Image (cartoon, rainbow, N blue to C red; front, side, top):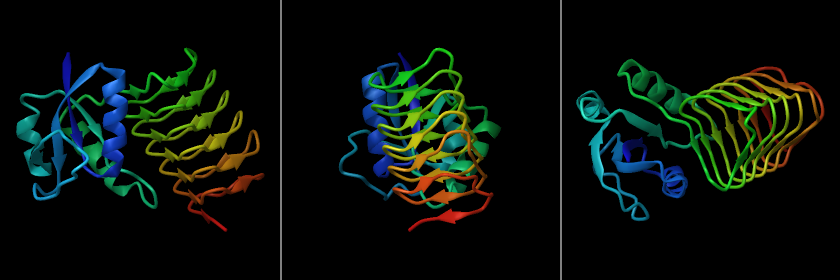
Length: 203
């Protein structure tokens, strides 16, 4: 079984580990953090290096997954993604066996599809995205790069979501609207019209 490194050892990493263990395609070799003194007692895998060790670790490891979470800003995940691409790591797509992904959907590299997600026909998910537990991505939806679609969000058919956007838990969209890049949509919002780029929408 191929090995995989995880970069980030916080709460989101615990959820990613659960998906990886159930998918059973990769053996987790260890985690990378910005500081070796950081610990997460819920994670039983070792922290085997810091960000500065990635160049050396690339000599013995090919696969890696960004397990840093994303709520207000995708900046850390974007920075790590670019660094890992420069170092020629492979960022596989991770899909929970409890998710449904249409054979006609497309998922970009480094994205994780978590438990209970449904991704329907002709949907396109960008690179380095988090599609979190029980999110519904309907037919012909386009999700840009570096997005997080949080738990229980419902993205209806033909919606487009720009790069670097966060869609909060339980958000509901009308069909065929456009949500611009670099937006933050707060939990529980109902979106019925287009949202311009760089917007914060919350109650």
